Structures are given as structure tokens and as C-alpha cells.
Length: 358
Length: 255
Image 1 (cartoon, rainbow over the protein chains, first blue to last red):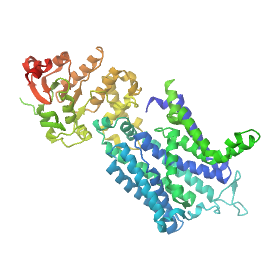
Image 2 (image 1 turned 135 degrees about the vertical axis):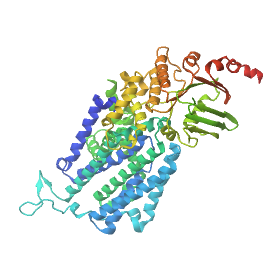
Image 3 (image 1 turned 120 degrees about the vertical axis):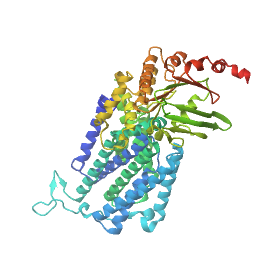
Image 4 (image 1 turned 60 degrees about the vertical axis):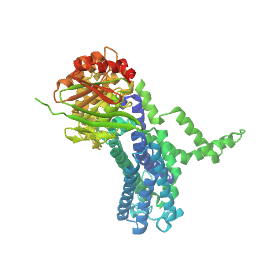
């Protein structure tokens, strides 16, 4: 590993990530309302999705717009299987495997056909593929539910009514005021599977393969000259990223119990992923955590915060209008511009680089 | 006693549109022999190298190494067949550390590039080998700096270290001392001399500095306008009219 391993900046970033991990681990106990749990689960899933995208854009230098498509394959795989086969673990396994299979076939096809061409053409091809997937999801309505999407039931252990533990009266047991019910089981399913996937990716980038990926990003021609088949490595990492995105899609489908084009396939999510990876810091893995946390929290809580601010400033001229909750996207935009200006390498990237100089 | 050539080019030719950059060059290179390739700018020396190491594909002719035809292979496949190449313009992995740069070259031939879940630090054998090349090129002091932070001279040394770490059979140096200060250049030349003393290795060297050519060369070939103009022992080639003509520009007058 590079010198950055032990600098203060790296320590700050790693400590922050560890802290976020701890908060997510105890989220159901720390934030006891449904919305907060919703946010925590979404953060877990987006950390995995953004980290897998970082394998492409940050580590290997591949620009793809099809990442959301692989997420969608996984989600629709899970959704269709749960709908058709009923709520059971067999459906989850079949759905996840089907999603992964479709993702891998498409990833190999796109990879082998077009990873040889220039980056811009590759980006366009992925954009086209993702558009096709979005259109197919809307059109094949008796299969995918079309624009309305599909609602289904998750395995029974995740039902809110399920009692994981009961007290003496036969009521659902509470620990620190938290109901030991299916919702809790569902959250920990999301947390643990996301953690495993994220950890696997961290190991991957620290492996010899990870160095090869960085070498391809830095100097493709030289990597080829010293004996690495660049096309094979690129196709491989594209498949790995697709596989992880697909699995995170299935996890999300199980958590939401609803899958539709707007939640798992739309380009606005693709843009969210891009923003998260840029804000967090490309090529760091830790950046994915920081980017996903900030962005999801902003999406859920910025409006609330602005509502409070608007009320507080109600007696002042102009300010309450500017701070009106309806203008939250405007403020989100300003925050992004400032972040990119002050953290050109993303938050994690910039902080880690600062430590290096000292 | 005849030594079989390790590398053979047969009628090697490449055309860019109407321009013939390398024209029907046929040459044998033998292990234990250091061949210096000379010629004025634009003679096709680097293009000739690119054709051997695979950055360019020949329009005509063939590159054969130990009986294996490499002509249609990718650069990475040729690297696995023992062709090693250092570049004229420094061509490194700028954001990776010096050690990582070298370890990549070692790793490429150990087959560890596909190991997914092993921490790279735990592959001590790889690191130990990389460190040997750091020592040989006197780069140990800067092992943990990114390549981009090195001085020009050290970057040139790293370029040579990358080639050595590939442990090839054929070493191709493209002006290894270009732009180097006088106190750095001997380090690199000593390394090349060492490789030459290992009688199993074949060395090709593009070089302009005549003192370097005199001390290292076993043989000189002269390229001019993409054609092989002369090929022979250093004394013989250096004293021939042909070389003087090419370097002093008389051939232009004759033509």
C-alpha cells in the first residue's frame, strides 16, 4: 500500500467510516422511528452500490452509465421471483441468482464487445444499454408490472408482525425499547449482507488485482506492455461490479417489498450514484461510505431542516422565501457546488491527500 | 560455435498510408549479444522497437522469438513470451509508489494478478523480489514516493527497474540515458552492462551517445529512412562511409 496508509488524513477518514459503521450497526436502537430506519437501510445499500461503481470509475477508470441497470436486474430478479413463487427463501435465492446471471451475461457482452473502444464510446454504449433496460421494464408490464412496478411480500421472518422474541405475556419483546420484530430482522439482513459485500470489495482493492486495476487507470499502455491483458482485467472488474450491484438490488427489493422503474432503474438514481462517488472521493472505497451517507441524509432531511429554518426566520425579509422547503433542490445544488469546489478529490480523497503533505 | 538467434525479424515492414516507417528489416539477435541501433531522428528506431514489443502491428513480415511467431500477438502476450521493453519517454504509473510500480512488473509474471482476496502486502515473496530491483537501481530511498514525485533521473532509473523486474529474455532499451545528468547515467549503463554479461540475455539498445555505443556495443545496426543500412561489428560500422554519410547528411546530397 502507498504511504497514505498511516497519515493523519487517512486516520481521520478511517475513523469516520468506522463511526458510521457503528452508527449503522446500532441504528435501530439509536434512532427509533420508521423513517430513520428507512434512511439507515438505504444508506447501507447505497454504500455497496456506490462502492461497486467506484471499482469501475475510481479504481479502473471505466466510465459506465449502466450501473443502475445491474442494480435493476437484481431488484427485478428478486421482485419477480417473490411475486411468482411466493414469499420464501427459495424465491430470494432464485431471484438473486437470476439477477446475477442476467447481469453477468450482459456485462460480459458489453465488456467484450466494447471495452476495447475509446472510453467515450464505451460510456455511450452503457447509456444505450441502460435506456433499453428502462424501456423494457416499462413495456413488459405483465412481467415487470410496467410503470406501476410490483408489490410482493418478503419472507415471513421480515414481516413487521413477526415476533422474533416474546415476553412472558406472549407479546413481542422489547430490548432498550426496540421491538424484536420482523422489521428489525429485515434491517439486520440488509446491514449484514451489505457489510459482507462492502468488506469483500475492500479486500479486493487491497489485493494484487487491486494494484493492477489502478495501474490500468494510470497507464493502460504500460500495463499492457509489462504483461497484463488489459481487456480481460477490465471485463473482469466490470463483471464484479455488475455482480455486486445486482446483489445489492436484490437486497433492496427484499427491504422495500416494492420494485418499480423509479426506485431501481431510473437515471436519477444513476446520477445520485455518480454524485455520491464524486462527493465521497473516487478510488478510495471509504469515499463511497461518506458520499452515500451525506447524500441520502440530505435527500431525506434537508427539507425538514429547511422547514425549521424557514419558521425560525419567519419575521425576517426574504430569508423565509429562500429557505422554503420547496426550494430544497436549489440548496442541495449549492451544497454540491461548494463540496466539489472545496474538496476537488472528494471528501475522503482530499482529506487523505492532505495528510500526505504534512 | 554458433549460438541460435533468440529473436528474428523477417522483412519487418510497417506503412502509415504512403509512408513506409520501417521497410523490410531482417535481423537476427543472439543471447549474450548487445546490439546498438543507431540512426538519425525519424530513422524508424522506435517504430522498429514498437513492432517487436507489439505496440504496433506489422503490415508485412514477422517477429519470431525462439521459434514462436509473435507477429499477431498483443503486447501483453509478447511480454509473457519474454520480450521486455523500456520506453524513450518516461512511461510509468505516476500515482502509484515506486515499490508498487516495480511490484506490478514482478507480479505480472508470477500469475498473482488474478489473486483476489489475498492482501498484496502478504505476498512477501513478490515484495522481496521487487525490493531487489529497487536496490539494484538505487531507488530504495524513494520506494514509498509516488512515481510522479521523482526527479527525471530517478524516473529513468525506475523505467529501467520496471524492465528488469519483468525478467525478460530480450531487453529493449530506448535511449535509457536521455536527459539524464552525468552522475546518474553511469548507474544505468552499469546495469545494462551487467545484463549483457549474463550470456542468456539478448539486449537491444537505441542510443545516440557515441561513447556509450563504443563501450557497450557488440554489434551496431544502422537504420535510415526505415531501412537497414549497415549491420556489423562496431569498428567496422563506425568507420564505414555509410554511417558518416547518414549522420553528416551526405546521403541527402547523393539522393
